[in-house]
Amino acid sequence: MIAFANVSYFEPWWIQIIKGLVIFGVAFAILPLLTIYERKLLGRFQGRYGPNRVGPFGLMQPLAEIIKFATKEPSRPTTSVGYLYRIAPMIAILTAVAALALVPFGDVQHIFGRRVGLYGIDVSIGPLYVFAFAGISFYGVMLGGWASGSKYSFLGAMRGAAQLISYEVSQGLALVGVIITAGTLSLTGIVHAQGGMWYFIPQLAGFLVFMVASFAETNRAPFDLIEADAELVAGYFTEYGGTSFVAYLFAEYMNMMVVSGIAVTMFFGGWLLPFGIHPPGWVDPLVVIAKMMAFVTFFIWVRATLPRLRYDQLMAFGWKVLLPLATLNLLVTAIVVVS
Image (tube, rainbow, N blue to C red; front, side, top):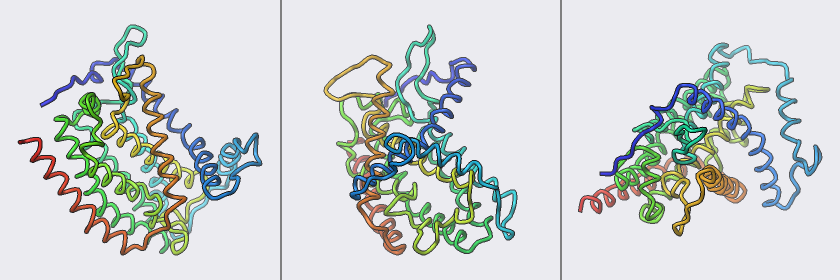
C-alpha cells in the first residue's frame, strides 16, 4: 500500500483563499479562450475560416459576445418556476469550479518560504469528491429543464438523467483499476505512483472506457443528445438567454477541462514527464495544462468528425458494451494486483 502525505490541510487559511481566487480567475478566463479555440479549430477541420472579423484574426470575438450576452434584457417564460429557473445555472457553475479545484497542477513547492501545493485541495477521497460534485451538477441540468416550463427543455433534462445513470457507473469503474494499482485515493498520490510508468499503458481498457463515458458525461458530440438542436432545439437550456445561457456554456467547457484534468492525472502522469525528465517545479503547471489542452483538442476533433448517435444507440452502448468492459477491467486488475 502506497501512502502520501496530504499537506493542503497544513497550509495557512490565507493561502487557501488565494488559491480559491486564482481558481475562479483561471476558470472564468478559460471560457472565452476555449470558445475561440474551438471555433477556429472546427473551422480548420471543416475547410472554413471560423471567426475572423472582430479584432486581429477574429480573436476579439469572445469579448464581443460577452458584451452582447451581458447587455441582453433578462427574461424568463411565464410558465417557468422563478427561483429554480435562476438557481439551476448557478449550480452548474459552482460544481464545475469545485471539481476543478481538485485537479493537481503540480507537486508541493516552496513559494515565498512556504510549502504550497499547486492544487486547490488534496483530499484523501479524490475521485469520490469529483463524482460527488458531478452528481450535484446533474441538478443544474434537471432543474433547468424542469423549471423552464418547456416540453423541449424537460425532455432534454430527462435525457440527461438517463445518460448520467448509464455512463457514470462505467466512468467510475474505469477509475477503480487505477486506484487499486496506485493503492491510494489521493490524486497527488496517484501521480507519484506513476513515476515508473503512466497508467494508460496497464490500464488502457479503463482509459478508453473513461474517455468514451466522459464524452457522454460532458454532453459533447457524438453524445450531445440532451441538447440536440435537431429535435430538442438545445434541450434543457432552450429557454435560457443572456448570462444564464453563458453560465451553462461555461459549465460545459469547465466540465470538459475537469474531465481532461482527471484523465491526465489518473492515466498520463499528471505533471510528470517521460524518459526521466525532471524540470523545475514551476514547469509542472505548464506540463499539466499542455496535456489537458491535448485532450480538449481531441474533444473538438471528435465533435468535428462523428455524427450524433440515436438515443437507443447511446443507451445500448453504455449498458451492453462500456459497463461489461469496465467491470472486466476491474476484475482483471484486482486479480493481477492481488496475485
